[in-house]
Length: 402
Image (cartoon, rainbow, N blue to C red; front, side, top):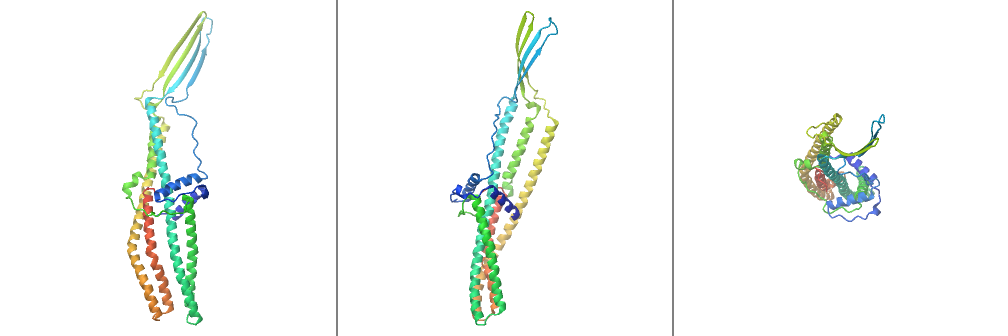
C-alpha cells in the first residue's frame, strides 16, 4: 500500500524546490490528466528555484583522435668530431580504431536512450505526486461536504432541543448527546477544512492552477506482467547496465587507439647533412583481447549491483501492486453492501422521524440512530472515491504516467 509518510515527504521536497510563484505562470485549464501532467512539467521547470540547467562541457569529442597528440623532440650529439649529430621531431597522433569509433557511436546512442528513460522517470514521479494530491483534494472535499451536511442537521436538532429544554421536555443526557455530537463534527470540519486547503495549495504548487479536469478518473490499463519490463525504474536500470557494458567493452585492448607517428630527422656531420622523413604506425592486434584487472572487477561489481537493484525493484513493484489489488477487491466487495446500507439509512431516517413524532421511541434512541444513519448515508460515496483512487495508484505502481 502507499505510505502516507512517504507521500508527504515527496510533496514537501517538491514544494521546497518549486517556489510559490503562481503569478509567474498563468496556467491554462487542463482538459484531461495528460494535459495536466504537461502543464505541471512546464510549471515546475519555470518556477523551480534549484532546477538550473546542467552546464555543457566546452571540450569537444573528436571523431578520430582518441587522445591528446604528443610531440617528442630529441637531440643526439656526437662524442667526437667523427660522429654525426642527430636532431629528431616525432609527432604522435592517437587515432581511434574503427571498432572504437563504432563503440563511441553506440555510447552516444545509449546515453540518449538513458536520458529519455530518465525523462520518463521524471514524468512518472510528477504523475504520482499529481495523482495523490488530486485525490486528496477530491476525497477531502467530499468528506467536508458530508460533515457540513451533518452539522446542519445537528444544528437543527440543537434548536429543537433548546425548545424542548425550555419546556422541561429534554433531559440533561439528551442535551449532552447533541452537544457532544455537534462539537465532534465541528472539530472534524476544522480538521478536514485544513486538509482541503493544504491539498489545494499542494495542487496549485504542482500545476500552477486550481482546476481539476472533469475527466479525472482512470481505468486500470493492465497487470504486472504486461508493464513491468517497460516500467521507467526498470528501464533506467537496464539502460545503465547496457551503458556499463559498453564502457567495459571500450576498455578492452582490442579497442585501443592506433598510433600514427610522423617523424622528421636530420643528421649533421662535417661536410654532410641528411634530412629524413618517415611515418610510424602502431596497430593493436584485435584478435588478442586483454583488460586491466581493475576494469574487469569494476564491471563485475557494477553488473552485480545493477542486477540486485533490478531484482529488488521487481519485488517492490510486484508487492505494491499485489497489495493494491487486494485493497481493490475489498473496496469493490464493500461497495454494493455500502450502497444497500445507504438505502436503508435513507429509509431509516424517514421511519425514525415518523415513530419519534408518534412518541414510539425516546429522544435518546432517536438521536443515536439518526447520528449513525447520517454516517451510513454517505459511506458508499466515499468508498467509490477510494476505488477510483486505487485505480490511479495501480497505474502509478505499474509505471504508467498520466
